[in-house]
Image (cartoon, rainbow, N blue to C red; front, side):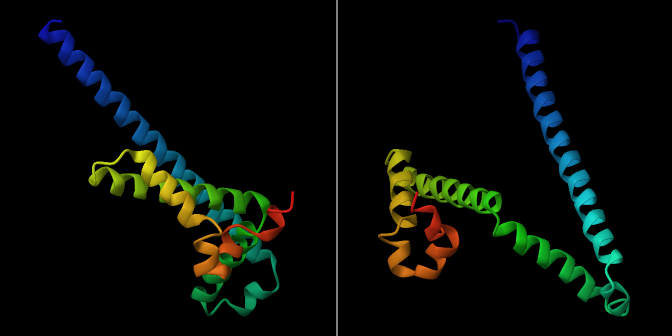
Length: 139
């Protein structure tokens, strides 16, 4: 492999990485702007918008808190929260396991044990009920 072709492949890899980061930032910023516009617009249609006109922090807090709480308790919100917690716990504990020269699967198994009913359910039943609601276990 010649030096020029190696330089071209490295520049190509940096270009792809740069594009992916750029696309992610653009999508995130546009998504946040759309979400913020919709939530503020909903608050403007309500009769409570005129009551909180002198308190902008109240309007912003209620527009952030209420939809977040409602969406978090829906089935899709619970599923996404479970996925995020399980993946994060697995990644963190697999990183810790690799520091002790253990395979990453050891950390992932430990994350499963810690997030299960035998540990999390024993240590904090409220956290277990919030993260993994009991009605999901009965199916």
